[in-house]
Image (cartoon, rainbow, N blue to C red; front, top):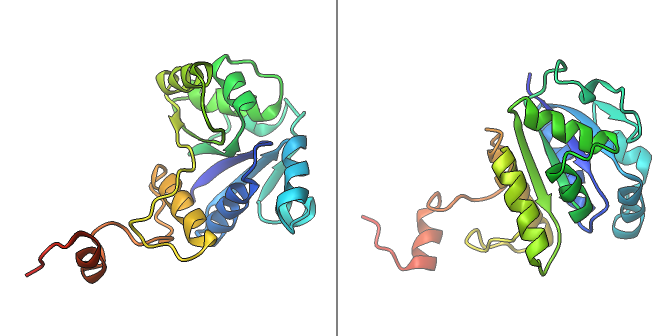
Length: 199
């Protein structure tokens, strides 16, 4: 069975972390959750979830200050880690291996073990310092994926936009959750958008 670490930090867009956990549970993927204090505050501001309902979506939940947790060690085997959303502070700590809490330590371990780390960095606009941090993490082997919406799948709701982002993120772990219409899959829709002729 696949096993992923899910981190939720204090940027706006906590729904991305929630949807990730929901989708992974439905896909039968074992999830190990770590959430920061700032993320808990955003959870209350942005959603109708509370901490208990969020934690119930994960198989295992860790205290963000528990540096001795299983996911702090490379000997604990997982398939990768996704941080959704990822703050600039979290990005900066990962880029500089500043392992001040379990979220950052788990990300650092993911990189050192050459496992897949994906960050849904949530900030805009970006200055040069932000971009340099993203470059640094990319060079370390991480994947930077800001939650930028696409429109080729003809989204009708906010959920459609969220699902497309999470679907693309999970593609990076070879998990096809069937969350959105892929480009070219619906010939009729593609023809309407592009004017292409299909024989």
